[in-house]
Length: 376
Image (cartoon, rainbow, N blue to C red; front, side):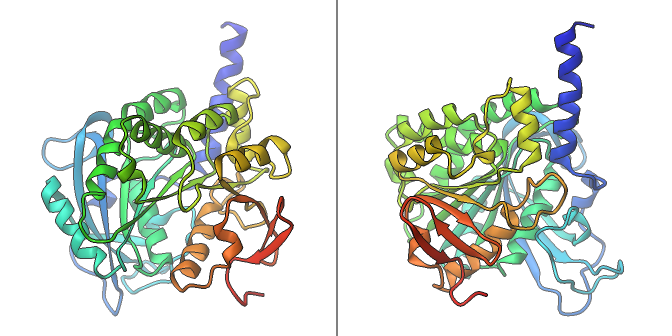
């Protein structure tokens, strides 16, 4: 075996293990509706999905890694108790296996018109806010659905949760194929964003891309800008969590996309072991999600692009690879934002360091701010 190939394979295995975590992976049957609803006062969570995965089953929808056309679904989920019963449970966004936190009690396919109708109906109860989650590398469809249900529970139904699921291989050695699949999905993500922007009512669209999904988000924004669809971009509030993007590539993407209002937010952790593995695969090229906020190059990117870069290294992680801290931050930050308790300094472009008390320290402007007013 050639030396280069021999070195490549263990790196892929390290990367895949890092991003997948150690939990047993849920199978597609976990998205089949349970025979009965949960007992007690457990509330339901509705998750909408848009995906260009193709089905591997002719009888029921089993969406795998094949590349297909854009399709829509609606899921109804309920919390499952820790003892295996059907009573409600407190859901933790850092849980390594969200499929154990929820059961599926409803599932139906939607055409695009029915999808839009569902979004319009749900946003009336969510204050006009829609949240699109774009997952990262090595995700199955069911893993992504349960992860979004978990995040939605953390913010107590204050958004319309929409999953955009691109056809990830969800396999140990699928990293290169996943990059190609993310490229394949660009047009469909652009179409979804354009569809969501058609609403005549005031609508905020929060879009979060995690890991390789962050690269897909930036490519979709770039495509919208090149097409002159500024009206779609103006509706968006964009966050990149642990972005698996080469720093130089991000610089060119951000320059073309231009400044966003509110500013594009990037969540980084310098000890992200998954991104360290990705960097090694790329011959040592640094990844944006593992950047140091005291790096002059990163500060210059923030200044030029009007970008908000937040170091969340001090937040607890759900596993040893430190790649999922965004879940903790997203729930805390969004809840505070909805209640009007986010400090004004956090809304500005700049680089920030989150300390162990929940205080955000603004580097270039020498300011301090708390995520949640009055937090200890």
